[in-house]
Length: 169
Image (cartoon, rainbow, N blue to C red; front, side, top):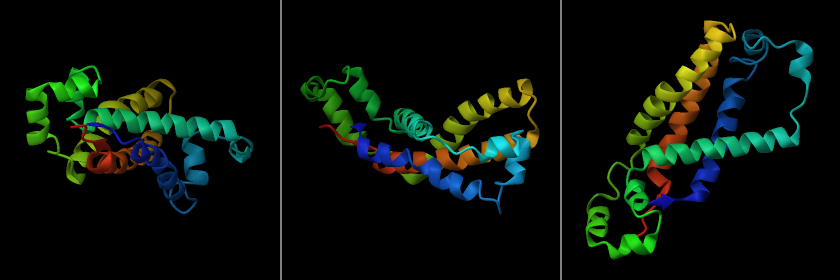
């Protein structure tokens, strides 16, 4: 499997849609998030610059690509050939393996496992945990930001698991 970059690119926008709802003033936005993030009204009022928006889209794309690598297991067969599709097609055992198992676990439920367990529990939770401990943030900060990333990564991984790979044989 190779990445479907169109799907990965689309997934880079999912955190924006989730953030729009999650950080809405009637949910966790407004004073709740501002308070736990320790932002002043003046800091919160500063508009996001275009370069910051583009950088966040790029970072989200990196997240989507990372989720592709851990979610679409057939990609590892391609990696064994150094990413060379011709080398892969010349290997009868690799072709046979991909024909038999290449589309296994390309399901939404598989994406839930990888987005929530690998993406959130193994990466985001420990990183946010460090911020909470050493930057002296509140447990509420962990819950609000952790919840946002748990939902975002789970939805991204579901989509990537189902449609993020292209079989190269």
